[in-house]
Length: 160
Image 1 (tube, helix red, strand yellow):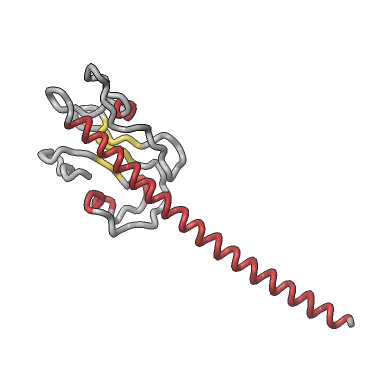
Image 2 (cartoon, one colour):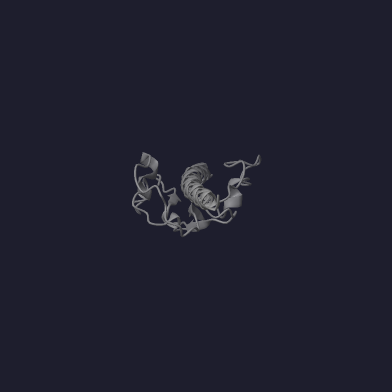
């Protein structure tokens, strides 16, 4: 009867080890899936900022100006009736913080944003046309969402 207990214990240990390996694999898969979802959120938020900056710039009365800060995209007070280009300031999904890296415009203001995360992205290619500049980036902080007018001499005028 004693030898039967040893086999039962060994069998139970094998089952626990297999379950542990299965749970570890499921955790890695879930983590990978969660990171891909955050990447999609980053693409969405970055493009929302890009479009809002473009709207602010293109609707500038007189000479074209970039917004002084991201808050100006929520409420543009240059008009009698304030204009809104964003409903809210999006959080950076990669860091979870409300803070973004700001890309300064040559004449002042903000012409784009980028994540402050130094993590390595999963997605490195196959981007939509408007996001082609993100291809080959090795960190999320290199995912730059920039608006430059089409006639910009900087070469950024393709709506990156």
